[in-house]
Image 1 (tube, rainbow, N blue to C red):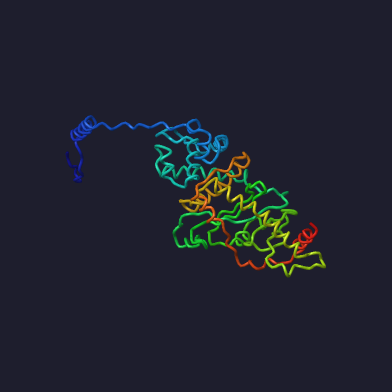
Image 2 (cartoon, rainbow, N blue to C red):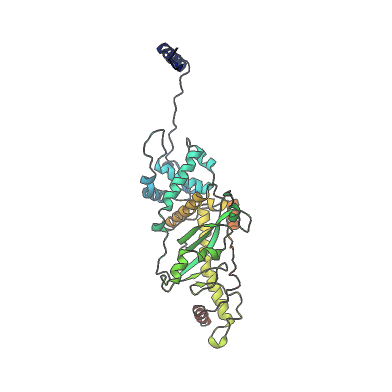
Length: 359
């Protein structure tokens, strides 16, 4: 070794050769263990149809359809380091939707670390959510639709606004508004409001309300629960029938009862859709354990998958007693200040009541 005129230290050629020799000795004495990658199972052939459906909540045919839709967009750029195939990425994400546990997912997909699995779920959820315009859309010719809200459980988002996500049942959630049809398909979804938000607030700020008010929905009307205010285009139950009863105009107490019964039966459709949606993807009830933005993508992605499952006429998966209990806990309303105003008299409501008087 030597110094230059500025007293900087340099290694001589002989020193470098000695270091290379020492490195070589270490490599020979302690050879690096070669990484052996275990081949990942082909889940489509490894599992029976019923086992596959139980694990991923969708049939093999439906999952292949989903892979065909987004496979090119989630494909890794190279095969370096034993990358995860698009098929496994979709299955891994569905497994997370079914269990809500990254540990379970990593146990099922050998060689995938938790951080990698989390990134895969985020990517696949985002790409499925982008299919929303194709599978979640509101037909203008739909005469009657059902609007309601349900809570999707999440972890505490942290930060100064975390308590906004704590709902009146004291757990953190996103209050999700959906509109569904008679076949339980989701036609519209709003998944961005914290759990403490009132149902009526979500509707008042939604694009669907604007469409109703501008007359873009033609002669359509929406049936909603007591969390919403009675409007010309929103029909809710008659809480206090006295101001409406007028036998001279054909509105009787019996007509009000029939009207309420009809609305309850119609509204039950959207409530049933929540049950099917959450049984299909239990993570919506047991809790999404990722960041808020990723949680919103997962909610929309599962809505897309739910509609695809409806189109493929998938059966409703079974759930455990624990999951069933979680589903019941998350189905409730956050009624706002509009409650108590549902005796509003408008021409359409009076017309409907007179109709039921003659039924």
